[in-house]
Length: 260
Image (cartoon, rainbow, N blue to C red):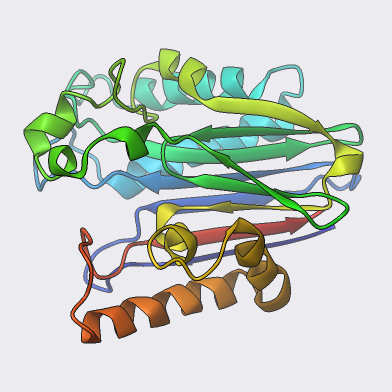
């Protein structure tokens, strides 16, 4: 069993808001992977005295501890409990009802000797490679159905944030855990897996360098760092060529690769 986790900040001028962890028990019978992508709010406009990295570290730490220590809980139940714990840590100092209260996208996987569980919320991605080499992408595509012109408006996006008919992120309401994309796969049918933030999935979803199987091939051959370096090179070349519409030149990018 082998894991690799790599994260690159989008800019040296601001903190990385992604968060990643991989935990392997000493017995070697199982493990867990957690990847978060913090949502960047407009400056000073989220009702919270804490930073996004504070939030993702709190939520990510809780998710890692609970997924490793509570096999009796499903990943949805673990996400709900972790959101509640994190909210409790700052509900007395912050306005958690604010629509832009600190929040994050989530990709998680947990495995034991029998099954591999997965959970994805918002635009992170989880890739599962089968024993025959085929790759299945687990995605929450609700954000993809929001028109681009809506996403250009903060007010219009806010009306769809954690709302029915819009998209969902892990913020302060534990009930959002029920909106995550979840499932289980027999352990014998999963050879390796990867969790990616949308800064890493640009290789497929923005630049179209290959499909998810191709992306997984890069991870297996060049590692997580190799994939992220490829993304950075594509971003730089695209900027020199005039660019396509993007929120920013570089985004925080994180990839965790695990061979089971």
